[in-house]
Length: 315
Image (cartoon, rainbow, N blue to C red):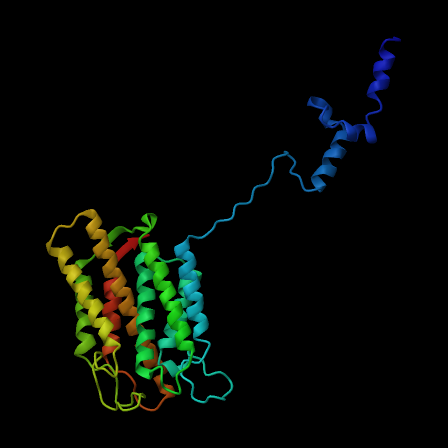
């Protein structure tokens, strides 16, 4: 009996400072005793997990192409909040480019910029949106003229944003992991859509008799030098039509087929953006006297949508 007493006395003082000084020596069933449980709860309150494993938090860093596209989209959206066409140098409030002053161009740039900023798109769609926005911004700058006294610096900001988005989209197109996989292709719908866009660009009336730019008061096609919106539509639709015929009548390898389909999708998306900007100007035309646009933009928009929807790809 006397040999057991020292052992009992050594086991009893496992409280207070002694318990906190030797937590690593307690294993097995001893860890379930009350002093150890109290110590474990105090440790958990300090931020450690109950199992003792560290908590790892992962942060996903976007690719360079995604950063460029997102930054370009942000600049595009912000640019339309400035004046693209200044009616009065000292006027207030600001005459923003997202309104009627840009005849739908600023509003389309604003919407496309938000799309590129907020939601990643497939390669062909991203490049088509960026190219279409770049085209309508350049046409607006050419029509107004940088030397005009009413020309606002917001257009230059928009041009920089669209160029940055195009650069990011091109970088994305050359990334191997972003090559599209073709799901479906409808050659008849693609050929008809491209043909409609070609016809609408030069054969149909693009603007009405009240086109607001100085020195132009008659109907004209989209390729007229005072209109110009139909010129990129004609080029893109012609390229898409050639690619569609190539895909129908000739056998292409898998790599060549992917490239042709992606370029056709780019053309269709860009046509939709260009024609859609003119249709938006038509929708906002009731703010201004007389009709602004004819049937050309509507037919081109239908053709662009048909061409885009005929090619289904997955990034």
